[in-house]
Image (tube, rainbow, N blue to C red; front, side):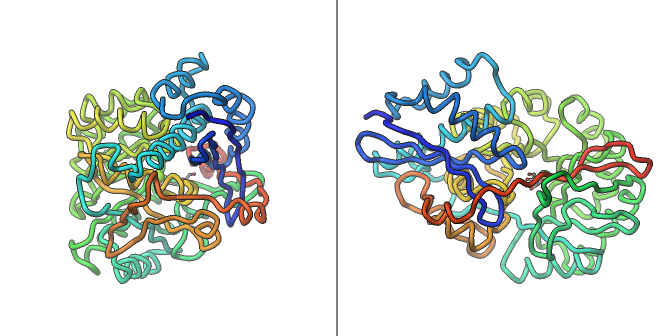
Length: 402
Ligand SMILES: O=C(O)C(=O)C[C@H](O)[C@H](O)CO
Ligand SMILES: [Mg+2]
């Protein structure tokens, strides 16, 4: 079998997605997600201008060799643009391999480790009361794990508080929206939110929280300690993680479980965090971390140290990524949880898929490959609409981590 053509589809059914479609001489087609929020066209160009010409004529069954060719062969290793492009190829090739074998992707990886994939949803509200209500709505929908983000008194446009209380969609303008951040106000407020949530709903559900890189290691240690009575499933991205050693200080001072990794793109970004057991959950996912082939290496390293997976699954990762991730989650022995923000109806219509939600779990389907396709005619009706992620500044104007 040979790859005869490949193309990139950029579409905006409510938000932008980049999808790679790979075709073969035997008519088997595979697709992969290549979406990098706010930097979509960079990956589209990387694929179209630099990767696709190298794919034509290759045997799609040689997934590992093609991965190595694109990673080592580029000379310029790593980085979100490169790794998202490699991920798109890798995902499409696993999709093709599954279709050729007549097997769902999880079977190719080694078969089922579990029946369903525990997911967490996003509850958010403009203030404490609204957030408590939003968590209640998720509980009513059957979720067993819920991430809670709230507007904070005195902070304009707090992270994670979106359009309406059931969705979160930060890429909202052609140029970055400016938001303001105030750490003392946040540190004062966040424990009160979780105290209220536990008081209202008890301890039956898992609660999660995303700090979104806003704190210093010492502030993160303080927050982790303050949240201990509320037994969070995890505290995410407590401090920026380029400096992996920074997590030593947090780890030393709190037993609140730590999750990190949605912005990582290779195993090198998390090697020390994992080997020194500085985190509990690794959040890398299929699209930004080099596809199934590389994510499997990260998960295997993590398994040695009892670090579990908790893949990123915001709406800016397309249903193609979600489908592949669910097969991965169904197989991976050291699975922890999967993030799941529901896509809009328009998005779901552009990407028909066979996964589904029931009673707090997502279930991948049994269709060969990863079970997600793209309706290119419908996709063409939604042209690319540039949108950026926001930035954050401290009250004195200093640029901070969004
Ligand atoms: O889902 C999360 O945990 C996020 O932090 C979402 C990110 O802000 C979003 O995916 C950025 O594109
Ligand atoms: Mg996050």
